[in-house]
Length: 625
Ligand code: SPV
Ligand code: MN
Image (cartoon, rainbow, N blue to C red; front, side, top):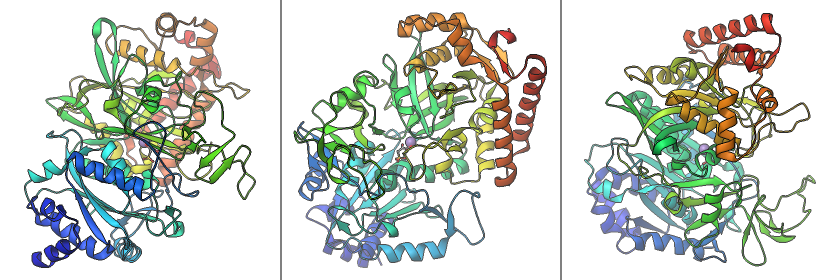
């Protein structure tokens, strides 16, 4: 058998590639690469080691093949996905499960055998005429108790290039690996291309085989669907973590800098496009990771690492005022991939919300673009797509945390849950304890939908721990994993909720864009016993005096008592309605929802009703003093 594999590889590997593969001395790797070489039938196979030359080769190919185009600033390129391939395709993302098994009612799955046949049919000879790249990665820091190794096969130079920016190299780790060690595997083909974009969008599939730790993705280029090592690996890692007793979360990790050089580390979960990246990028703080964290209990403490080394971030509204650090990286020479932005006549990228004038024409994901251009349904085509992105390495940012590559991660003292909520939760609130936080804050996140996924925007959707899109285990089990995670931890992280999106009756946002920085500093003080709080039926909220001082210190702003009352009023009817919605979801859609969850929600409901009887529907925080 091995001989057969080696013959296939010998025949297809470009010069030097065969040796690079053989040098790994790993029959499982050889078999995987050879069998998909045979099945997808690329013209040639390139094996990427961790060398600079190999990375350079892929970057150059992306340009030569037109998958990326050079922009004016050195190192910057632009990539376009097709008009209908601009976000994660939830409808076509499926788990392959044994007959009769499901993960949850809203988590798509199909029978494994059927799915494997279908995807292999689509993948058959899908790489013909192209080169297949074989890339090795390490999820999490190198040589760390957190690391997971993975291989990506792809016929897209853009995908291979992006992953090299986003994920730590793993070829050397593979070389040191024991044969039996398991690794994640990803197979991607962009399928038939027309003008360099995937043509057969109707045959777009993202199939996840949890038994084998393989993800297949085809007829798509959008990174959220294709970059195996990002959200697709996250799905495999959620399952692995569940089996092994740790957590994989849709969380940033950051250091918040308190008084006397104190640094307190937080991880925070927010649904896509709800301020996650902009929170961990706040000026004066340091970032460990912006999107995915692995959390483990080590020596009785909870520690977290960034799974990635780069950012695939939403570019809309990134400008020198709101996100100075990222903006700087986007206008400085260096390796940056812009996707689905507008390219101006000056060969500069433009995106909605960038500093400067809006160009009147250029090239974007719809081809030649001019101001007021509309699509077939007469809907305006914006200069850049709302989900247009940038891909950069964290090391190019000046605010990267010094522990970013620490194999032991950082000790997490605070967890934050956020969401896009226009009418219910206060801007910041501390839970009573770990279990109350997991159950009433994490497990109840609702968020109004955004352009990060295909479909209508602004619809309130349940999204527990902002992780629903990526869950590969039943929801009840996932909740209990979280609840139990703090067992044996002497002082578990303090759990908070934040809401940056409260609106007034006229539909205007109540809080300012930068106010999140004050909430963050308050949480830091609170964890360290340096700020007071008022106990309400839903948690602890800040006292006015503390916020007033923080607004002055952090934002140089006066914060009026009126603003405070407006923001921190307990909205009883909305809170009760939310509990009712959430209970209904868990009762009707989550067969393994734990009793402890219903108990926590019922108790919260009772506390709300008690204060409602006493103080009415909208209760100012001072009433709880
Ligand atoms: C998100 O949508 O949450 C992202 C980008 O971080 S994606 O890779 O598309 O998931
Ligand atoms: Mn994300």
